[in-house]
Amino acid sequence: MKTLAERLKYAMEVLPPKKIKGVELARAVGVKPPSVSDWLTGKSQNMEGPNLIKAAKFLKVNSAWLGTGVGKPLDKEKEADSSNIEFARLELKKIPVLDFVQAGMWKEVAYDGLIPLSYTYTDYDGSNPDAIFSVVVTGNSMEPDFIQGDKLIIDAALMAKPGCYVIARNGTNEATFKKYKVTGYDEFGREQFELVPLNDDYPKLSSKNHDITIIGVMVRHMRDYKY
Image 1 (cartoon, rainbow, N blue to C red):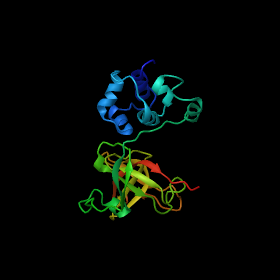
Image 2: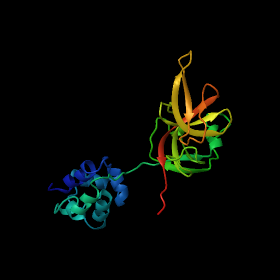
Image 3: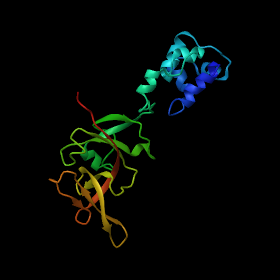
Image 4: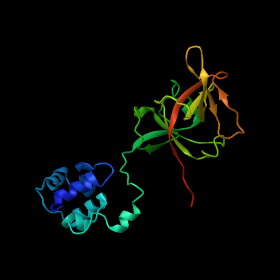
């Protein structure tokens, strides 16, 4: 790769797990998009000084290689360190964090969606952005896999499937977090199911005996680790 344009395209399109757009590079370097276009088309054949350093840092390549073609895109130490990971460039979306009462009212007119506990961000991309929210695990009914304080991302647009984890409402406005287990079908072909806690000290809930409404399906589980 003898030209800046070739090296830049390689660093933006081949090396990363997801292609980097010219506007993203322009934003990171602090230049206007036409400047990046000039680099990519070969109209500008050199990148020097602060622009080169910023571009190399954003693209995670060696600045000497990017600017002159000397050396390798990644040095051996960086290649070894990143051999089992990928650097993610995430597009984050703001979602509400609800308590279990608010989660239980998610599909009801009573929940106005205006006063959540707080907000968080996720890169999870469901079919309906307005159907995604977060809750924090309370209690110990889902131990050992889920402990108090764990954060969950819930997609209310998804249908529950056997073995998935769900937020559901049982008669009252308060929701519960359990594993979804299909036990059979009624005369209309509708699934009969149980909500199963992972902690055996807590009872199962059956759709045969309880009026259960599935609110949403867990799509992500997050935990903070102490050190």
